[in-house]
Image (cartoon, rainbow, N blue to C red; front, side, top):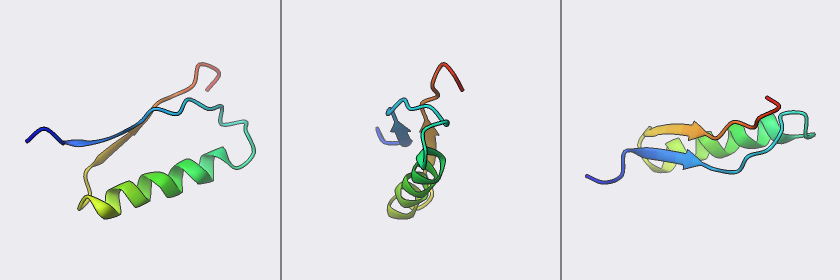
Length: 47
């Protein structure tokens, strides 16, 4: 199979208000629609 998980490529600082919770929600939604496939969230250089 060619689909082994999710890669969320939006690079955003965790200092952006609401970013952490938004990415958590998005990651959980990706897992929910794909029967728990792995989810990688692209990090941002300033952490």
